[in-house]
Image (cartoon, rainbow, N blue to C red):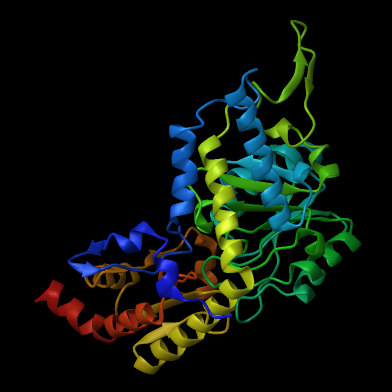
Length: 412
């Protein structure tokens, strides 16, 4: 079923309100960074403050009980979305916090100087820096799985890099610069045959394609709400229950313990509450549940199909200008990473902004990918189900005139 973009946009105030940049109608092509929020999400967040304000698991009155039920409902909704058990859904502040929870709750506890963690060059900082810190703390080694010539992670390259010392492989399901879809199910099989765990950064995949963690058989998966039409400051860590049960909490405090005494004897609750110390982002949890229900109503397969079509159209149109270098023409995700020939990436993005077009430029928090790309910075246009073909046309038109008009504007 094709997506009716015009109808979809009617659900989003950012479109209805006629937002402009530099006097132009906004063309938002930075959805890999964050996404717009539909009315249903905003209503869920607002309703917490206007009709449902209370804490959760902190009182013996109706409002508090209702919030307990609402949080459990959200956990079950997200578990169903991922095809997991609700006890395997931990609420965090985002994918970064989720990955750090695995790093310091699991890896820092169980890894030592003879162990190894494998990453790739294409990883976001949130899936690199926590593991560097774990290596500093434990003495374990960090090594990298080679990418193929396109920048893909292949099962063959993983198998060739795995060793008996490899305890953890941490990779993105979809990389945030090149947009390649990793074969997670096959990677998980190779890891498990080697006695290795697989941790997946799902920040760029969960909002864009159907994700079944039982079928993928990954051990951990992290994602953020704000990239899925949800609020900022809320995210999820999925973990297999037996692994969560072995982990140490990243933070301690109220709500995550069963008891403690003056002798320092502490008993923690079972997962997922063990990892949710203090008052949670309750409005964020309600907003995330609404966001999940919204994208499910659009259809995850429909979203993926729409983005693939946009990607193909954008690559063809941009290539036809003969004025750009495209770095990921063959990748699956709705991400086009490019440079305007003869114009530095940030300068190109500044020019696009003057035309009302929002793209990201720079290194996109994937700083160790520069050597592979052989460039210090790129422009990234990223799409979602509310992106239109007219948005792509506006980008192509601007790119066509970018070098000439930018040079004239800033150097004459």
